[in-house]
Length: 363
Ligand code: NAI
Ligand code: MG
Image 1 (cartoon, rainbow, N blue to C red):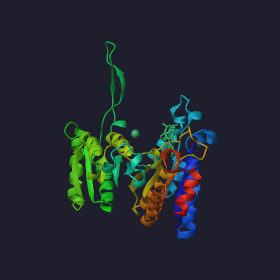
Image 2: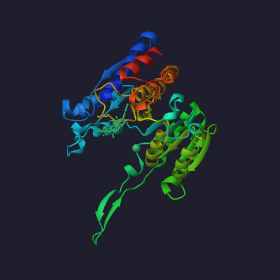
Image 3: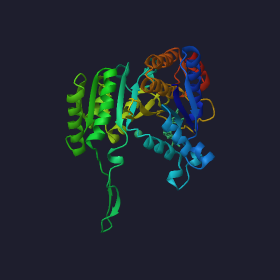
Image 4: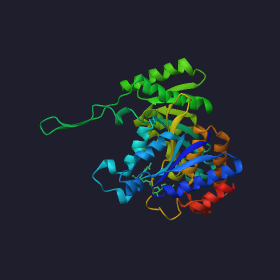
């Protein structure tokens, strides 16, 4: 069967960066004889304009039917005002993640040699860095009940969120992380705060148990998340794969991202549970947003989206060699001095989105 992809370019620079992925897909078809069936849909503000909702039922049905979804970005000032939250562009993305059951968010932090100077950290600390943070995405304190703000008398109010994890929620995301570690450096570090949180203690127990049962060949360590935040800055190369909960993962993945220099370079993947054939629902998207400040001007850096497509090739289609082709092409183009505005440095050649795409294709 052909490989089925749904393209959701979205808003702002989304369509501009996704166009460069489309060119790589055409190239793969011609030069590698690897053919994708690509369908295209609307999400976010573009879908609100066309259908009145940020994710139509038809688009959702298509997303559920394909092997993988590639998304650009959603949002923009045009749609920022409405009082109805379900009509905001972000609601389309959240609905998509929820309906696809995407519980594992993969956030690589890879430092490209040519961009070491763009980072705010010491070059020797980050040169050659290649780590992967696996963040639990559908549980924890962002969703736990009870939650809310209540009056408790005497003019006092109380805000409540609840951190909740069940064993199955912990095990399924830990399993993804162990399996990824096996394909990489065979090293997993699990982060929580088992010293002060019940959910953290359960997390540590379940990860340890799963390790004993199925993944003894992977080197497992545990770290308190606050120490993890320090270690990421002090010596990030001690890590290979990190697995952590929704809240800590939100913070730690943003922290790790800063080491790589620019939002325009950061890809992500979100994976769901495997079906009977071992195939997972999956969504691939750059970490950045729709960048309204530069949209429509051919200025955006397409690398984050192209690297997201490389992840798609690797994790949804088992095309590791082709993923590496893209990653190496980007590395070489950066090594040759080509830079979009966001990663521009003295002595480098400033280029547009399209020219960056041209150069990567040629490479
Ligand atoms: P943003 O990521 O869109 O932009 C932040 C800054 O980084 C801007 O100065 C932008 O020009 C720059 N930037 C981002 N991606 C770039 C790229 N590929 N190349 C060059 N420069 C790039 O975040 P911001 O400004 O907070 O949000 C803008 C809109 O995007 C909002 O409507 C927000 O809700 C939405 N958003 C959507 C996300 C998504 O679709 N996953 C994620 C984050 C924000
Ligand atoms: Mg965040």
